[in-house]
Length: 261
Ligand code: ADP
Image (cartoon, rainbow, N blue to C red; front, side):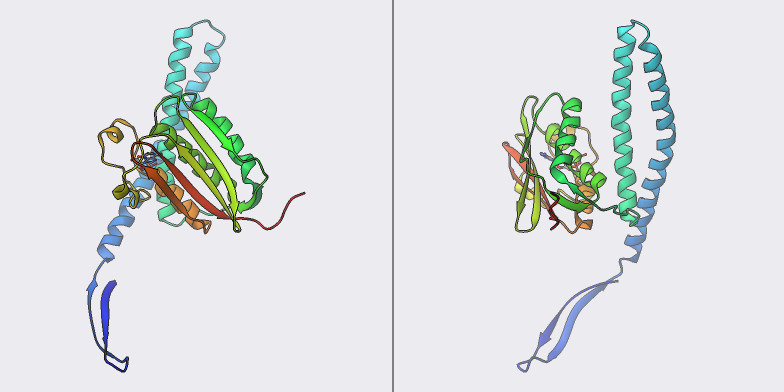
């Protein structure tokens, strides 16, 4: 049950009466849980054939290497790339479902977030040769967090920066330590986001309703997952954007006090 109301007080500060409304949201909540279970089940079921498909493709790629059939090799590379995209989408849905049911646990360790950013930037330079990916900041910065999940957040933000910007533009990843917090940002020179969309950007399934967004594949779950992961680390996530000029996504993590020599 959810209640919304207001209390009215007399001159001595004693409540005189309370006006309000009581809403039954049990039905709505159950609907959400059912939807969530369904998403989890479907994603899980899709994962199995997709894993076998990827294995067969890898086997074929291995065999084809011994031949000179460049058409077959190229085509299979394309198949593999699409399979990877599909797999990432399904992982996204699985993560949403796990997050919603509270089943995601953090595996926290102390690590240097700059080293992580550098290795993710390197991986993304291979997958996204269309963009110039820069890392700004080199000082070792230790955080106590789930390295894999923070890596997923950074990768997701870089992926979006590339998706929503032109070929050959810059993506800058920065890491700063300010007042006991580590702030990581991913800046792009892309399409930008109008102010009225910013508030809903981290909502589940939200996509900006525009002609450009419709031409770009996505389900609106990436930023929701990022926000949930950061929330669970007691950090914050936000965006600053200029429509038509570009966006900078930020997230903060509490800095670890220990310094490693
Ligand atoms: P998806 O990209 O799959 O739609 P996300 O949750 O990652 O889902 O992003 C939600 C929406 O936020 C996107 O559909 C897009 O409209 C907007 N968005 C995200 N990142 C950017 C960006 N770097 N620049 C402009 N718009 C963005």
